[in-house]
Length: 295
Image: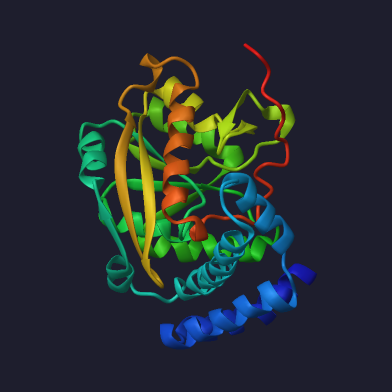
């Protein structure tokens, strides 16, 4: 009951904000950025610690500069999620452009399914725009929202572009069913965050830190012979993004275990180094780091 009341009270405000022009929303984002960074100090210590660990060569001044830019981007991300609710498909494609996607289409047109691996870089929430660039089904793997009303609303809204949201706990089952029925699908994974330790199968270096990493995307790709592509997402300017796709592995099972995952993480590092202010530094990415054991 409480979840439903929150939903019906908040939804009108969300819709009202979504209808506002970007000029107004960007102004609100600047205000939100100031509040989060300066007034509320929202995870600022964590953000600066993460940046310092990833870029130990940076001075304290440089770290604070990246942190400040991050909060503005983080606020932009928030308003862009809301704006996407009423953004037309035409406007979406204008603000979210792609290159290299033809490689993925070639694979899909050969009746083979594929995986896109990406990091929490730029606006990963706008990845739903990718479904506008293909006639094949695009599935984004996601964690269900606790409020079932908001979860249903988001799934319905994302479907406007043709996107299918696939809960993590149904991922393997769904891909297996598609494989059995020879149904072609494109699956999007965000695989750069820290997994739970009990599910960890691989420890490796990320920004020079020895940390546990997700291997689920690679394992599925190897089992069902899914071609794997990397998405390098750049922020061109406020609320404008460009995604470039490159092949990580055409037949992952031919590689040694975890080579694909390590290659992916290396790509993420490169992307983050090019635009460090657009990475999700509010997550405790290095919380389980440990000293690398001698081999």
